[in-house]
Amino acid sequence: MNARLPLTGVLRLGQPSDIWFKPALSVVVAVAPPNLTLLALGRLDLAMYAMAGSLCALYAHNRPYAARARALAWVVLGMVAGLGVGLVAASLTGSAVVLVTVGALVAAVQKTLCDATRIGPPGHVVLTFISSASLFAPQTLPQVPGHLALALAAGAWAWLVGMAPGLLRPHGPERRATAHALNATAAHLESPSAHTGRSAHAAVQTAWHTLLAAGNRSETRRTLERLLVRAEVALAAPADTAPSRLRAWARALRGNGPVPTTSYDDELLGVDIQRALPARPWWRALGPLAPIAVRTALGCALAGYASLALGVGRPYWALVTAASLYQANVTLTWSRGVQRVVGNLLGVLVFAAVVPLAHLGPAALVLCCLAFNFGAEALIGRNYWLGSICVTPMALLITEFAGHQEPGRLITERVADTLVGALVGFVAAVAVTNRRAGDRVEQALAAVERAREHTARLLAEPQPATDALASARRALAVALVDLRATVEAASGEWWQRDLPQERVVRAERTGHRTLAATVRHHRAEGARA
Image (cartoon, rainbow, N blue to C red):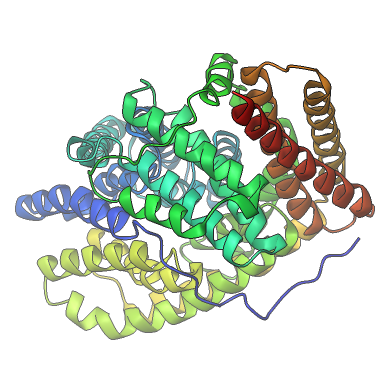
């Protein structure tokens, strides 16, 4: 099967995230103090190492604070580890071929771990940018510990910045996730379609994941769980729920006001069962990610080698460009490639316009970088290419921290590396097939069929236990969401057998009918009670 490579819609702008300003402000607050301190000390040449730790503030903004604390700590450690590998390699060898090879392997590890742990945006790209750039930073082995200590200190500050909002809104991420699920469900009820239905189910499951990861089960979180149950019920029985009521609940979740109450306590017994189940270890996802890891390693290495062959002085730009392309399938990788090229080409034009201002002095250089940091995070949620317009000049200006660079050469090398990295990286994605995608569809289908049969058996019992039925319904809903995500990922892959589309449609249809039957049963039991 050959997936189509789309051109229309690739650059279309989406709606900004509800919290677009939070990562944008966080990265400015995380980057500014270390950079301004180095500016005051006259050591802007060390800014790259501080930036490594500061950029960790970009991660985990949608996670509840208990989970965010752990995720940010691992991001900081992962960032410092990647930086350490790069600096040690740079201090031990001057061979550009060896350094590119090390960078490609590190990029593959970073991509695989970020996907397996589902760390979320910005994923492996920022980690790879730092580790790849460090490979070509002039370095001696005795300098490495001090540079890593600076990165770790900036990372600790970024951790504090990421956790600080919890002092004001301790349940903010859970409330936002629940509100998004309620609004998505209301949108489906108002304009029913396959797309709005999948979006609503996915939003509900994301909200459940957020609540289950939130740690201590406070009364506020239990009330949010009841609202999510109402969203699930609305999806299963749309005619019985008013969209306006769901939207009113969602509006009430803004700020720190009281959470709307609803009576679905018996349904929360199913949540108790789900919480008691052991979590699926993240490392079990490593096997299915093997083709993506090979694509990343091969594509990054070949892009770096091609850049070296062209005589470009910074081959890590081509390596990072290739690394940024790899998505769940070839079609999405193509779309990201188009977005990356367009954004970078426009970004070098912005750099050409701004560089005279940045050259007014070190303070102007730091302020320009801060402005581009904010702009990148504020815009990238609408489309990747739009954020790249700010990322590109920021990356070019960072090279100025170590000393003045000739703008014309920087622009020429950046354009060359962008085109080389995008072309070679995409060719590697096509060359490395992912035939396991079809197998995962079969596995997802089997999971849906097992969950549906289990739920149907419970419904057939004279008096099924409420907690068991609620747990079975939630497991079926999760399996249906996973099936749709797996099918969409596999549909964008090349060189594989045709997918069992009829079985997928039949499984989804019968699965949703079974979900509706559980709601009807619950309401019938409530009426008799």
